[in-house]
Length: 131
Image (cartoon, rainbow, N blue to C red; front, side, top):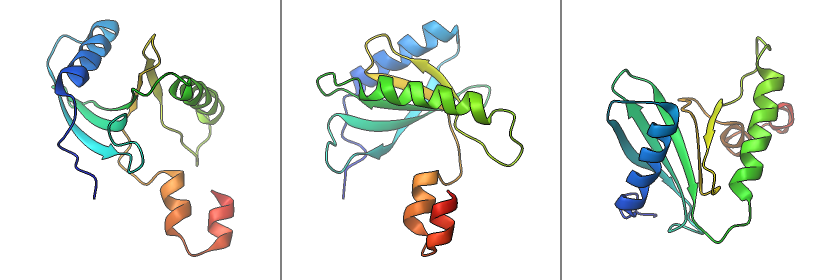
């Protein structure tokens, strides 16, 4: 099992501060690690961030030597969000911020299963195909 409590606190605080300054958020933000990669636990993590006003964000980090993985992922999220924004029965996570160095990005936090989780948890090939 991956340990969710063993991470570089100073680095995470630095990333959160960058996000706060860029988005002009003045209040303190709470955070907790909600996911660590089983394959790359030291470099790929996701943190839940909560603002005082109740807004919730997800910050995905990848500190491995640059392969532009998060930059590409963020671009795909932007395209998908733009496409699905007006759709009534489909939603995509809203991309909010990509760090200039590509080490992290922030999206709105979703508290429901992701498409990947649905695909892996269903025994129905038809449902997986629809997702």
